[in-house]
Image (cartoon, rainbow, N blue to C red; front, side, top):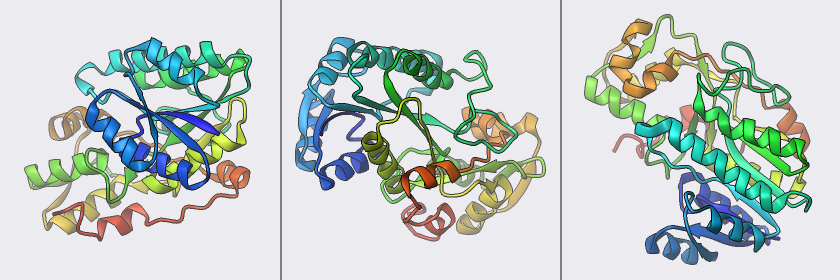
Length: 298
C-alpha cells in the first residue's frame, strides 16, 4: 500500500515510517523543510512538499496514496486552540478526498480528554466539549467523517509516550520542571492515574489500524491502565535525588505551567478491545523501566 504520512519525521512518526516500510508498504511523507525531506529520504520514503496549513498540499498527498496516516500536529501551546482547529481542517481536507473510496485514514487522538475520572474504553465517545479541551476537535471531526462513510480510525495515545527518541514529550517536561524546581510534585493525594505507551508500540498500532481499515474504530495505545501521579513523581524524585511532595490543585499551574491543568486529571484507560482486535501486546519497556535508563536524565 502507498501511504501518505504527516508528521513522519517526528517522535512517533519516525517509528511509523519505519514500521510501514519494514512491513512492505511504500511511504510518501509530508515535508515542510529540506531537513525533513532529507530525513524521509534517509528512512526510505518518498517526499511530498507542503505543510499542515497548506490544505491543497494535504489533499494532493491523499490523492496520490492508497491510505493516510495523520500523525502530524503543530506543537505550539501558546496558540493551542488555533492549532487544534487547524488539525480539524486537515482532517476535513483528507475527508474530501477519501469520502467514498474506502481508503483508510488513521489519525492521532488522546485518551486524556475522553471521559476524565473513569476508566476509558475504546467504545466510549468524548464526553467533553471543545471549549473545555480544544484537542477533542480532532476526534469530533473524525466521528463526523465516519458518519459520512470515511474509513477513519483514531489512535488514542496515552499522555506519556516515551522512549529513547523522546525529545519534547510530557515526560521530558515533567523531569525538566522537577529538576528546575528541585521538587517532584504530585497534586493532592496523587491518586489520579496516567497511562503510558512506548513510541514503538504506538507506531505498530498505527500500522495495524491502517491494515485493518475499520470505519470509526478507536484504538487505545496504552501499555497499562495508568500509574498514579504519586508513583510518577516518586520515580522522578528518586532519579533526580530531590524531594517528593504533594501540592494543592491551586498550585499546580504555578508549579507545572500550562501542564498544571493536565496534572490534576484522572484518566485511566483500558486496552482490552485493542489487544483483542489486533492480537497486539506491548513489547517494549514500560514507562517505569525507561525511567531506570539514563537517556532521560543525561
